[in-house]
Length: 120
Image (cartoon, rainbow, N blue to C red; front, side, top):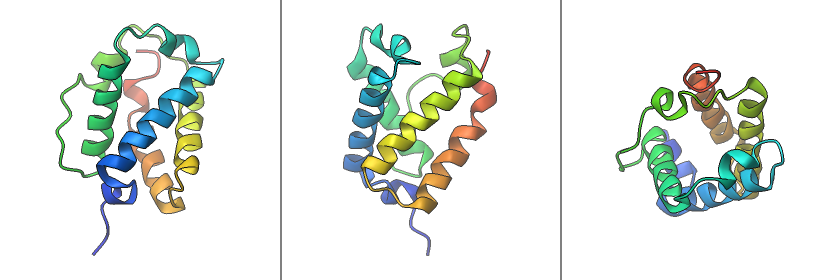
């Protein structure tokens, strides 16, 4: 039996740490930090991010936010920004000791959403 990605990411606690590290990395990254500095309710964004990662990785929580297309519509996210965000996510995955197969699974999920995020 294969362990769900949710468990490989550390379950609820692991995903909470990942989200905190991802957001912190985005805020420190000059290429995308302005996208995140102006968020008024960061706690809400973190909650939705935890839900999204949990749901997308096979965990028990339901995602209650907008779809990716609706969430990113009008933001005009560039290809470069998309790749920078992925790099930041990998910084957090590495920091949290996530194994290579799990990182590949996360990358596959991110790339499956690309057309719903870039230049919409």
